[in-house]
Image (cartoon, rainbow, N blue to C red; front, side, top):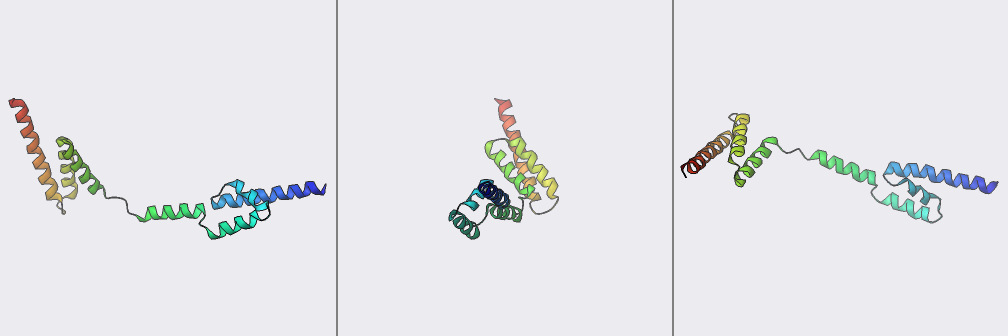
Length: 133
């Protein structure tokens, strides 16, 4: 009977440490390390001196929050330039016109209007050459 109680105590300790280790970000099976002599000391030394998975995840999420999200106007400008470079002049012109409207006199609005006007001329020129041939 005492060996059964000893086995029950060992299982309870492993389960309890398994819950603790899972809160730290490790597998619950790491609780088995807590009942193996010598291995438990090495394991405790390891988790005491290294960064826990939960700490790493928290650091990464805080780093992600610290970087500001990209400005939607800058994204629209890049997308319009991409459309223009690929020859999709109508889409690029629309985006430049939207940019000019949203900037509403702020720096860059004249540039966006100029790009939209230039693309409008390019579209008309292309239409004239295709209809004239």
